[in-house]
Length: 613
Image (cartoon, rainbow, N blue to C red; front, side):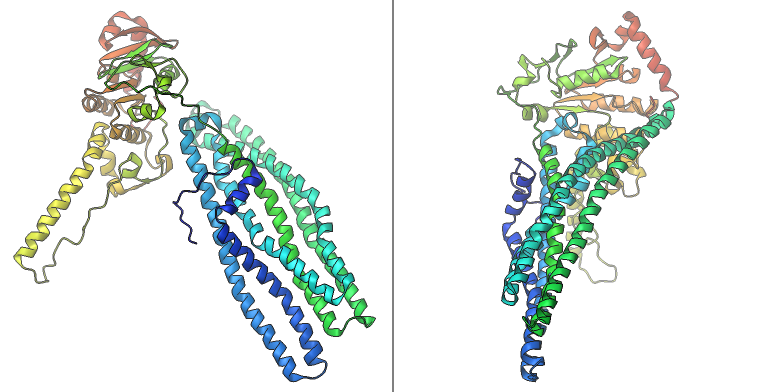
């Protein structure tokens, strides 16, 4: 069975941590079964070596029978060769088991995060998701060693116990009772480890979230002089996480110490009893050799059993965190009514904002959060009584709303990848590029040259058609200069969140991405706040032209944008205080005039890429 990183992982088990681990095993049971068989045979053959050695001593070496000695020695060599081959198969199979569990868990977590959509941020922190993706996935996959070496250890332990019965019943009882005693000693520590590990993971997710917040807001913190205060808080959280890590390490060290020390005491006891029996003449020299060999061979299964318990204890903690994430559900979508077939009015009763279809509307307020809240209600990202036409948004199926209404936020995520993919258009490389030209030194007739030129022209036309929507979106967002400045143009790799671009460039890339989708209704919050006045004016003119006849709502206080709007709603304390054109409100509304005048004073000194405006 090969591992397909893109296949459907199947519906995950959500009843609990143990259930989830069992589900990972069931989803690849042939591979897990093969790993268990390879591991079992491999460990059993480790115990077969002392058995063959005892026969070589008793039947070949002691009586002086060179033929028997050579035969048993040859058997030992053959078993060793087969076991080496089985060891390779076991390791390869268990690596596939772990990788399958890793990929499958990543896929179910990412798929569920996508299903949660906008509800993700309100239900779980970013640090929790990052901790699951970075740490818990690896821990879960490592815990699946239980299905290979773990099962093999149990089988090998039973087989060695059976072989010991042929030598001495007393030794066999000591061997068979040893592991239960180890479990009684180490078992309580495993339970304590789960508790400490759970608390450690929770603190780790909190600290991871804080690191992300600091990375995103470091510039603002520097400007406000709050970097030292936040650094002190982070230092305190980090110290508490370190202390919890010490507690986890203390329990783990006891488990590992007892896991190494107790088996050695147990195996020493078996060896001592075997030596006494040999001295009393109750077992042969060969049997004494086999007892010692069995004791050595038992080291592997005992070590694997202890490691299995340790990994399962950590794995079930990680699996519970994954299950808790998978149990999160987006708000119920009970919409059954069809969205308006034709463009219709969007209305938000909470604020009094009424959006006429096909027009460019602006929301101006001294509190940007008030305008953002209106956009969220109109886009159905928060519960409200907003209507579309005469139909409440809550009664329309969410997929219909998402396919026709787009809310574009200034901090929308930008994923790493080529710029074309970041914007949202998968631009295919020019087919046949580099193969259309004919060498001047190679013979070619005129017809072949003509065909090649025709093919090249056709490819160029196809390329231009593919790029047309993207080119139009970049033009509307005044982002062509960004493409020209990058070394490989649209194919230039962009870092996560476009960190290798300036603030103004990121804002224009986000706007181009929103325009490329060409939604029926576009709700954009502060789409030009990080741009200089010249670029902002260009974007305002091009945006109006690109969205002509389409419903567009802009939350902004820039006079350059407001002057291009068909209608401006002035919001005070989250409610419409006045409505009209930009110039009408300047003449009749002192509060609006003061708001816009303040923003106009900020326009000139602002620089492109400076998010301080």
